[in-house]
Length: 505
Image 1 (cartoon, helix red, strand yellow):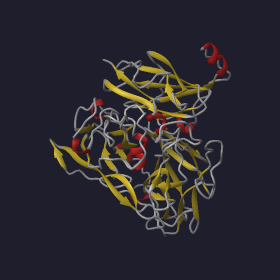
Image 2: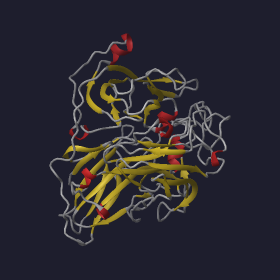
Image 3: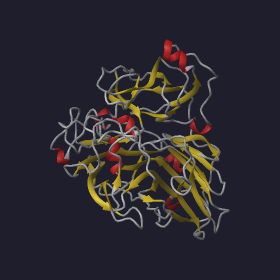
Image 4: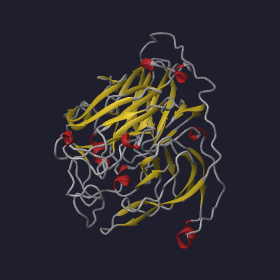
């Protein structure tokens, strides 16, 4: 087992524009293969990184200041992770290495959204059926928030992100700057992922389900759980901190692993934001659950902890088992050993940002999350019992607000993500699964439960729990066009739990 807390936490570098196009900042980002040391005792590991970095560099942009990004693919012709060519979009007829970048949570026109079939290969030699332009434009007309960018190529997302193609994208605005939150070196993004390794440092990703089925090999697996935890690209790192307040922008960037974070000294998190920006008021939480792709903006107060080491722990049950504290139950270590460099003048204001509660809607949809077997006996997770290739069935109108009732008829929690939009969670309610299975009727078996206090902000990813109706209210806009919604367990989204939708005029 690799020794914990021996490597310092990497602070991800910020990317700067290479120029301007008509006064709009212009960035060039190149996807490259590189070797990176992920732990003191591991040989350098082959990874794919944006600008050759895993994780990629962090974008810091200003609200209402658009940016242009040219995403360039300079990756090898062949993948180093196992590709299942029976997965839709990853057939043998397709190029083995394809990429397209999605700004997760970005309010972006469809031509810059990273549609899964808008992929391109090295030097744009081949492009997908929905490829429209090389230069992406991000308008950034949204409040201060923590987004992330990652690969979204059809049938390969789980492998390309696992290879290293992910990074943070932070939008700042004047309203947030006026709040006097911890800033500068006391404001640290944390990308948390799980990985497994061969002894020679290579990334390990399974090439068949466990237990094995009579399936093709390589075969897509139901979900992936690594046996080590990485933060900002290091295995179980540590960071030396001062006895003061820190702001941590936490992203669960794992393929399938959920986390319930807590601090070993019993201190709470003060949560100030969720996926799509600041909450209305700070929420004190003793522990923090994040599904894949969810973000949490938190403040941790180390002011009374000088000389103490505090471990960021995880106790979320995976496949019915609690994580081992010696492995996936530990995330990273904070060492409160630096003396104060200056007096902590930051504050936690009682009011953060307005979050107007949505109530009125023009349309409601009932959408089932379900599962069936494929011809090899593998599980396919589906949205409303439809495959990706089935005709488009969700066509909300531009400017209208809809309620989506997500009926989870599976045994898994599915983090459902919609591109383009932000939404609010209305409530969750249990239903009689037997009646639903036999008759298709929804019979509630308990009251509607409002979302937790720290879920009452703007979201773009929602945990839809099994045996429950999860209701979300969604204003569609500001752009028409072709987008997708999907489960953000990457193995699910790659194998059919993703659907296109069109915002119509």
